[in-house]
Image 1 (cartoon, rainbow, N blue to C red):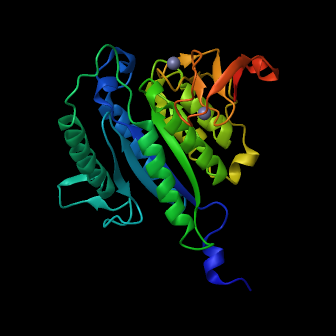
Image 2: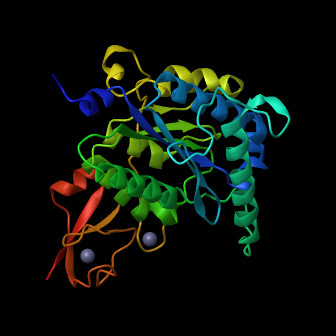
Length: 305
Ligand SMILES: [Zn+2]
Ligand SMILES: [Zn+2]
């Protein structure tokens, strides 16, 4: 007979790390007009509740992705209030599950703190949010869970993201994506902004997660519950949205611009938008740019002398 512990953690027990975009520049911009932040949070809370109800061993961790900082908002394994069914009687709001007020309280503290750090203006348009930071925090958390022993819930990361990609975060985001791929942690993406996110398209494609940009945001909970609530084991048996196309463009290391064509260092694979005499990353000195097979992918290779 199998020991009890191994029966507890079957393949359908999930650890969902939820990354919430709280970037104030995004939520006050016109691109989020079809969904307000409060509606967004109510959809998310219902979704978190349903995951916790699906299996009593399921675990949810919420990380806020702000404009300047990231922070842990909620961890169901540490939460003092146990069941999501128990109503919060102390606050007098009998309709709201106790964990919701806990999440809202920490979210409010986080947003206030994030706002107070905004010394520089976002400039023109909507500033990006710190996706690379929250992805790293999520992966650190997952690594910690992995190290608790062979019996742990199946982790996955879900990014609820609306802000445009910050090209200056390209290297950090790609490193996180490859780290997630290595740890076999799928990164699911639900894009709630006006534009597709090339970062998240690549993240979901590379890690085997699901990428979705819902058409009607007022039904966000339906998308979340039908697509993203499914545990990794059950995903084999259902039809999930297929990616329509992935934007594989990279950002150059010199100006952080998104480029279609560029130059790549043959030593460290750094990407540049213009020829350089020396690689700014690894210091290799270049000879003449060679156009070899890698030109097919739109890149000229610089061969170090
Ligand atoms: Zn450049
Ligand atoms: Zn280099």
